[in-house]
Image (cartoon, rainbow, N blue to C red; front, side, top):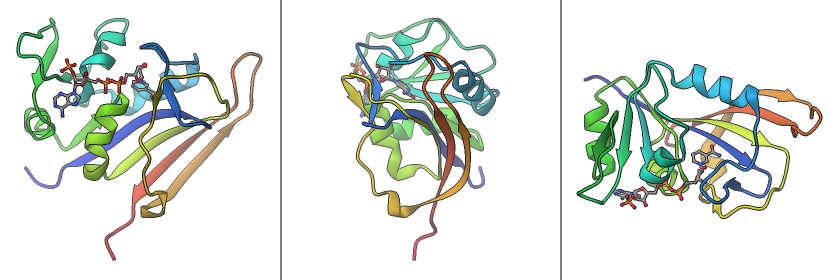
Amino acid sequence: MNRREVFLVVAVATNGVIGNDGKMPWHISADLRRFKELTMGKPMVMGRKTFESLPGLLPGRRHIVLTRDPAWAEDGAEVARTPDEALALANAPHVAVVGGAEVYRLFLPLADRIEWTEVHAAPRGDTHFPAFDRSGWAENQRESHVPDGRVPGFDFVTLLRKPAA
Ligand SMILES: NC(=O)c1ccc[n+]([C@@H]2O[C@H](COP(=O)([O-])OP(=O)(O)OC[C@H]3O[C@@H](n4cnc5c(N)ncnc54)[C@H](OP(=O)(O)O)[C@@H]3O)[C@@H](O)[C@H]2O)c1
Protein backbone atom coordinates (compact mmCIF):
# COMPACT_ATOMS: atom_id res chain seq x y z
CA MET A 1 0.00 0.00 0.00
CA ASN A 2 1.07 3.58 -0.62
CA ARG A 3 1.25 6.19 2.11
CA ARG A 4 -1.08 5.44 5.01
CA GLU A 5 -2.51 8.14 7.26
CA VAL A 6 -2.97 7.44 10.96
CA PHE A 7 -5.23 9.90 12.75
CA LEU A 8 -6.33 10.16 16.36
CA VAL A 9 -9.85 11.18 17.35
CA VAL A 10 -10.13 12.39 20.93
CA ALA A 11 -12.10 14.70 23.20
CA VAL A 12 -9.99 16.24 25.97
CA ALA A 13 -11.04 18.46 28.87
CA THR A 14 -9.04 21.51 29.88
CA ASN A 15 -7.44 19.46 32.68
CA GLY A 16 -6.42 16.66 30.32
CA VAL A 17 -9.19 14.28 31.41
CA ILE A 18 -10.60 11.96 28.73
CA GLY A 19 -12.38 9.36 30.85
CA ASN A 20 -13.73 8.45 34.25
CA ASP A 21 -14.62 5.02 35.59
CA GLY A 22 -14.55 3.50 32.11
CA LYS A 23 -16.81 6.15 30.60
CA MET A 24 -16.67 9.55 28.95
CA PRO A 25 -17.16 12.30 31.58
CA TRP A 26 -19.58 14.31 29.38
CA HIS A 27 -22.29 13.88 26.79
CA ILE A 28 -21.85 16.18 23.80
CA SER A 29 -24.13 15.11 20.94
CA ALA A 30 -22.32 17.27 18.37
CA ASP A 31 -19.06 15.54 19.29
CA LEU A 32 -20.61 12.10 18.83
CA ARG A 33 -21.87 13.19 15.40
CA ARG A 34 -18.43 14.46 14.49
CA PHE A 35 -16.86 11.21 15.69
CA LYS A 36 -19.22 9.33 13.39
CA GLU A 37 -18.40 11.54 10.40
CA LEU A 38 -14.65 11.26 10.98
CA THR A 39 -14.61 7.49 11.42
CA MET A 40 -17.37 6.25 9.08
CA GLY A 41 -16.02 3.68 6.61
CA LYS A 42 -12.58 3.61 8.22
CA PRO A 43 -11.03 0.93 10.38
CA MET A 44 -10.91 2.01 14.03
CA VAL A 45 -8.11 0.90 16.34
CA MET A 46 -8.89 0.92 20.05
CA GLY A 47 -7.87 -0.53 23.38
CA ARG A 48 -9.78 -3.41 24.90
CA LYS A 49 -11.15 -1.14 27.66
CA THR A 50 -12.51 1.39 25.16
CA PHE A 51 -14.11 -1.40 23.14
CA GLU A 52 -15.82 -2.64 26.29
CA SER A 53 -17.04 0.89 27.06
CA LEU A 54 -18.93 1.16 23.75
CA PRO A 55 -22.69 0.72 23.82
CA GLY A 56 -22.27 -1.86 21.04
CA LEU A 57 -20.61 -2.25 17.66
CA LEU A 58 -20.56 1.02 15.70
CA PRO A 59 -22.08 0.42 12.26
CA GLY A 60 -20.03 0.93 9.12
CA ARG A 61 -16.64 0.66 10.79
CA ARG A 62 -14.24 -2.15 11.63
CA HIS A 63 -13.26 -2.50 15.29
CA ILE A 64 -9.61 -3.52 15.70
CA VAL A 65 -8.98 -4.14 19.39
CA LEU A 66 -5.59 -4.22 21.11
CA THR A 67 -5.30 -6.68 23.96
CA ARG A 68 -2.56 -8.79 25.51
CA ASP A 69 -5.09 -11.39 26.61
CA PRO A 70 -4.81 -14.41 24.30
CA ALA A 71 -8.26 -15.61 25.32
CA TRP A 72 -10.09 -12.34 24.61
CA ALA A 73 -12.61 -12.42 21.76
CA GLU A 74 -15.86 -10.62 21.03
CA ASP A 75 -18.20 -10.79 18.06
CA GLY A 76 -17.37 -8.03 15.60
CA ALA A 77 -13.92 -7.32 17.07
CA GLU A 78 -10.69 -8.05 15.21
CA VAL A 79 -7.93 -8.70 17.72
CA ALA A 80 -4.38 -7.28 17.50
CA ARG A 81 -1.53 -7.86 19.94
CA THR A 82 0.72 -4.96 18.92
CA PRO A 83 0.32 -1.55 17.19
CA ASP A 84 2.11 -2.93 14.10
CA GLU A 85 -0.27 -5.85 13.96
CA ALA A 86 -3.24 -3.46 14.29
CA LEU A 87 -2.02 -1.34 11.37
CA ALA A 88 -1.27 -4.39 9.22
CA LEU A 89 -4.74 -5.70 9.94
CA ALA A 90 -6.30 -2.31 9.15
CA ASN A 91 -4.62 -2.32 5.72
CA ALA A 92 -6.36 0.92 4.70
CA PRO A 93 -5.28 4.40 3.53
CA HIS A 94 -6.79 6.11 6.60
CA VAL A 95 -6.76 4.48 10.03
CA ALA A 96 -8.64 6.04 12.96
CA VAL A 97 -7.18 5.56 16.43
CA VAL A 98 -10.00 6.13 18.91
CA GLY A 99 -8.46 5.57 22.34
CA GLY A 100 -8.21 5.22 25.20
CA ALA A 101 -5.20 6.76 26.88
CA GLU A 102 -2.96 3.69 26.62
CA VAL A 103 -3.65 3.35 22.92
CA TYR A 104 -3.26 7.08 22.20
CA ARG A 105 0.15 6.85 23.88
CA LEU A 106 1.15 3.96 21.63
CA PHE A 107 0.03 5.66 18.41
CA LEU A 108 1.00 9.31 19.04
CA PRO A 109 4.48 8.80 17.53
CA LEU A 110 2.85 7.30 14.40
CA ALA A 111 0.05 9.83 13.98
CA ASP A 112 -0.15 12.34 11.13
CA ARG A 113 -3.27 14.17 12.32
CA ILE A 114 -5.21 14.62 15.53
CA GLU A 115 -8.90 15.46 15.49
CA TRP A 116 -9.06 17.06 18.92
CA THR A 117 -12.23 18.20 20.66
CA GLU A 118 -11.21 20.72 23.28
CA VAL A 119 -13.86 20.46 26.00
CA HIS A 120 -14.05 23.64 28.09
CA ALA A 121 -14.56 21.93 31.43
CA ALA A 122 -12.42 20.36 34.14
CA PRO A 123 -14.32 17.24 35.23
CA ARG A 124 -13.10 14.67 37.72
CA GLY A 125 -11.48 11.79 35.86
CA ASP A 126 -9.10 8.84 36.13
CA THR A 127 -7.85 8.77 32.53
CA HIS A 128 -5.85 11.53 30.87
CA PHE A 129 -4.56 12.18 27.37
CA PRO A 130 -0.80 11.52 27.42
CA ALA A 131 1.55 14.48 27.58
CA PHE A 132 2.87 15.39 24.14
CA ASP A 133 4.92 18.16 22.57
CA ARG A 134 2.34 20.44 20.99
CA SER A 135 5.10 22.43 19.25
CA GLY A 136 5.45 19.57 16.80
CA TRP A 137 1.86 20.11 15.63
CA ALA A 138 0.22 22.89 13.62
CA GLU A 139 -3.36 23.93 14.22
CA ASN A 140 -5.08 23.63 10.87
CA GLN A 141 -8.73 24.29 11.75
CA ARG A 142 -10.77 25.42 14.76
CA GLU A 143 -14.54 25.59 15.12
CA SER A 144 -15.89 26.97 18.40
CA HIS A 145 -19.16 26.10 20.09
CA VAL A 146 -20.58 28.03 23.04
CA PRO A 147 -21.93 26.29 26.17
CA ASP A 148 -25.57 25.23 26.01
CA GLY A 149 -27.35 24.44 29.24
CA ARG A 150 -25.47 21.56 30.88
CA VAL A 151 -23.29 21.03 27.82
CA PRO A 152 -19.93 22.79 28.17
CA GLY A 153 -18.44 24.86 25.38
CA PHE A 154 -16.07 23.03 23.07
CA ASP A 155 -13.84 23.57 20.04
CA PHE A 156 -13.25 21.14 17.20
CA VAL A 157 -9.55 21.42 16.39
CA THR A 158 -7.54 19.71 13.67
CA LEU A 159 -3.83 19.33 14.39
CA LEU A 160 -1.40 18.31 11.64
CA ARG A 161 2.07 17.01 12.37
CA LYS A 162 4.67 19.55 11.24
CA PRO A 163 7.11 18.20 8.69
CA ALA A 164 10.44 17.16 10.19
CA ALA A 165 12.89 20.08 10.05
N1 LIG B 1 -12.45 11.29 25.54
C1 LIG B 1 -12.21 10.45 24.53
O1 LIG B 1 -12.12 10.87 23.38
C2 LIG B 1 -12.06 8.98 24.81
C3 LIG B 1 -11.85 8.09 23.75
C4 LIG B 1 -11.69 6.73 24.04
C5 LIG B 1 -11.76 6.30 25.36
N2 LIG B 1 -11.97 7.20 26.36
C6 LIG B 1 -12.01 6.78 27.77
O2 LIG B 1 -10.74 6.25 28.09
C7 LIG B 1 -10.90 5.25 29.11
C8 LIG B 1 -10.22 3.95 28.64
O3 LIG B 1 -8.85 4.23 28.38
P1 LIG B 1 -7.68 3.34 29.02
O4 LIG B 1 -6.38 4.02 28.75
O5 LIG B 1 -8.02 3.00 30.41
O6 LIG B 1 -7.80 1.97 28.21
P2 LIG B 1 -7.66 1.59 26.63
O7 LIG B 1 -6.48 2.31 26.04
O8 LIG B 1 -8.99 1.76 25.98
O9 LIG B 1 -7.39 0.04 26.72
C9 LIG B 1 -6.28 -0.44 27.45
C10 LIG B 1 -6.08 -1.88 27.10
O10 LIG B 1 -5.54 -2.00 25.78
C11 LIG B 1 -4.68 -3.12 25.74
N3 LIG B 1 -3.30 -2.66 25.44
C12 LIG B 1 -2.70 -1.53 25.84
N4 LIG B 1 -1.43 -1.47 25.38
C13 LIG B 1 -1.24 -2.59 24.65
C14 LIG B 1 -0.14 -3.12 23.91
N5 LIG B 1 1.04 -2.45 23.84
N6 LIG B 1 -0.29 -4.28 23.29
C15 LIG B 1 -1.47 -4.96 23.35
N7 LIG B 1 -2.55 -4.52 24.03
C16 LIG B 1 -2.44 -3.36 24.68
C17 LIG B 1 -4.72 -3.78 27.11
O11 LIG B 1 -5.81 -4.71 27.06
P3 LIG B 1 -5.83 -6.05 28.01
O12 LIG B 1 -5.95 -5.55 29.39
O13 LIG B 1 -7.04 -6.79 27.51
O14 LIG B 1 -4.53 -6.77 27.72
C18 LIG B 1 -5.09 -2.60 28.00
O15 LIG B 1 -5.68 -2.98 29.24
C19 LIG B 1 -12.40 5.10 29.33
O16 LIG B 1 -12.79 5.93 30.42
C20 LIG B 1 -13.00 5.67 28.05
O17 LIG B 1 -14.30 6.18 28.22
C21 LIG B 1 -12.13 8.53 26.11
